[in-house]
Image (cartoon, rainbow, N blue to C red; front, top):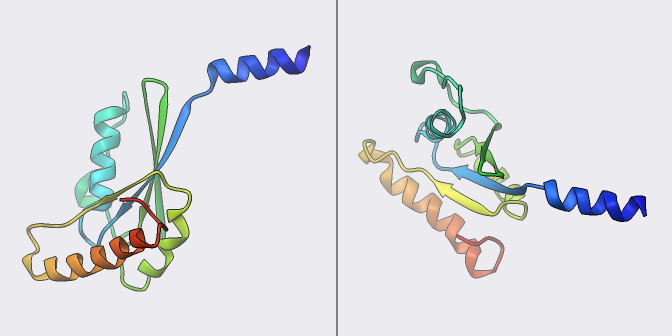
Length: 129
């Protein structure tokens, strides 16, 4: 009986949880985007000063709860040598946000190429975009 009640309680109070990758070239604004989202949707959260945001080496994690739904963001470093790690996160993620710095016109072709490599994985059913 305890197991049944415990299971029912767990079902009633559980939150939906989603994992979202934030990808893009280095210095595209991924961490700035995440900080802006956390500031907008998290009560009493004072975002990091944009001038203090540095290049992400590895992984930056953020979490936002909205109406009982938990969104976990994985902001991955965009340096070329770190892009090979991106595919390790695809299977666990529910969505991908790809950030492009439209003011850096010189890097738009690189960003397009990187997005194309990532997008080609959808053909094989590895990720959904």
